[in-house]
Image (cartoon, rainbow, N blue to C red):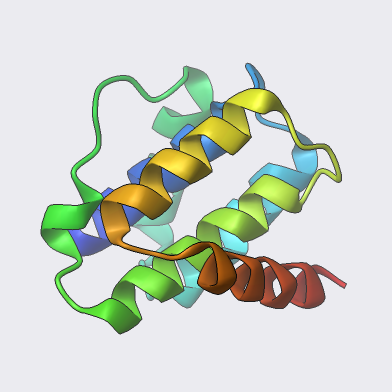
Length: 123
């Protein structure tokens, strides 16, 4: 797994665990997103095993590994898909999204547009 992919996956797991538990819906979306990122099955299995056994710890550095605007917007859309997949929005998830959007330089209107796209993709 490339460093950029690994950092996005780390953030996806942090989002899934933000409310204290990774729901079945979040796990399903995580799996689909890792496939979309082009992560090979063997690496997805390892990542899922590690990421679901305990909450992701430590600070992520996604802003350092996503230098261009498009990759930042795509990563945020993926994070929002995980966030809204279980149809519940916990305060911890809101805090994490706010922190990431600030660090990635994503405005409130952009964040709303990404939320709508992510919600549309979830069905």
